[in-house]
Image (cartoon, rainbow, N blue to C red; front, side, top):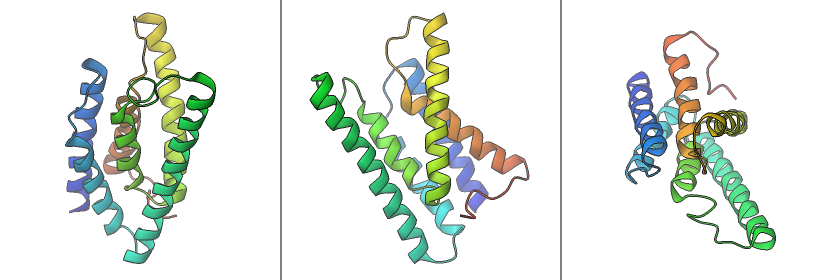
Length: 162
């Protein structure tokens, strides 16, 4: 069942990537579907529900702190509207859906690397295409899709061992 849910999550990530890249809008229902599928896979791979709840709580608090920090920096220094101008609602929903799927240490590593991946790809896209905004949810989704795909098809260390 875990592998099937990983495939479902991969399908949702493909949709998020495609829609964010092409249309710059993502259907809202994809984010709860992604959160649910990642959370169930996460739950099935931890020993106790208490540990799962602890990881999800820590990840959610971490995402909330990051978004709050971004909001405060934006409010104090940039002084432009934050949501849907500098940071999209889809990006916010993706952050929280992503937080459901992994133990905290794995989440931090994947989150940081997905942000770096998104930056590098955006800089490449900006050089060769007329792109003004970062399709953050889509690019982070592509990164997570790659990681999940590798964990399905290649015998790698478990993402849930931390």
